Image (cartoon, rainbow, N blue to C red; front, side, top):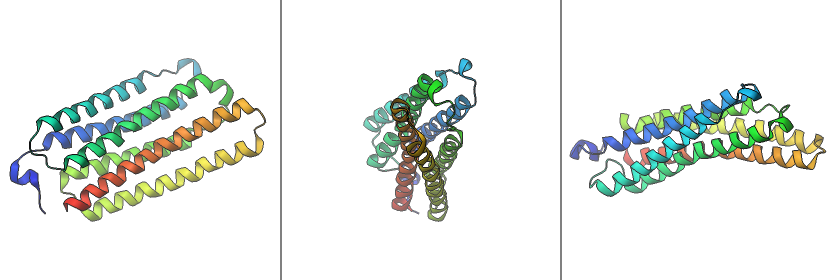
Length: 209
């Protein structure tokens, strides 16, 4: 396998930064599941703010290192692309948590937890995929993980579609309908961001294997 890192001994820092970024995305998904299981009076958004701030710091650090590093183990465009899509995951999750907390009295009977668990599973697979970049970029391993990601994303889409279906059929309050629709779309977007990041990782591995 051709590896710039092997030849030049450079690029370890980008692997570490991207791994930390995927871990921050997973942490935001774990925090969301915890929030949904916590009584309303005890809910806090602090973990979401910390995960998003950490992700932003890592994205800024990656951008700075790309400017200051002459040789990188991965193509610069690939590093930047993956960093950007990873950054968006905690951002969307925090937005969902904020709006859910504000509107929870009106949507308290809607169970978002099974869908949030799907998001957590997507983030776990994504974190494993990002870890493969450092480990040797095996195509079969990457494909297996990406297939798992696609399967989870498809199942999550099905579950979210059920939420839409119930809302379309049974919801008579226009304001509550708009709130639910907004929350459904944000949760779906967070899962889609994981899928997008997985596709970027798999593309990188295909190019470098």
